[in-house]
Length: 214
Image 1 (cartoon, rainbow, N blue to C red):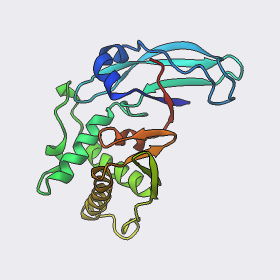
Image 2 (image 1 turned 60 degrees about the vertical axis):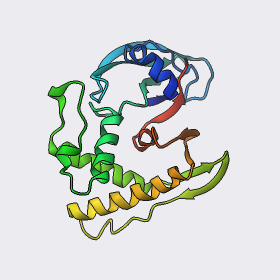
Image 3 (image 1 turned 90 degrees about the vertical axis):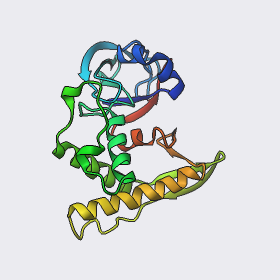
Image 4 (image 1 turned 90 degrees about the horizontal axis):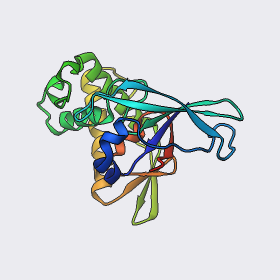
């Protein structure tokens, strides 16, 4: 099971190198059987996490001594099942939407490892993934600590046409609606955690969320 660990932005800024080196603890309660304090270390592995500031990270693994379930504890800024970081996807999508005349290949950010620049097919897939997630997920917005509403973006012509123009229009509508909420001071309560404009994209990718032990 992939468990995505939520670190505060302040902690990441101060301890990014330690996190990348796997120098963090992980929750000891089992998310599978629900028993407290039964998850122990089960090794580490190095995986790629290509982004604007990262190349690879050390990921910690755990195992429940009661039910034998194994866990991969992945910092939430890393994408599950991908060699690219969340910030790479976020920068590409936001840059592309912000400049209506931009080519998709030009919207991608500069990568720390210049040899890992994604191809056009990967960039196109990022637009699809983000659009489908925004349209298919209900987001509960919270304003000033008070739940405001659960927002479901209408599936704008999702099954009518599959053209690139249609995809861009859907993505633009979804991002504009979300930006309006964030600009009004709201945040998203998703799976028990708060996400703001600067880390909202972390909520768009799979995995159980858990608070990092720092």
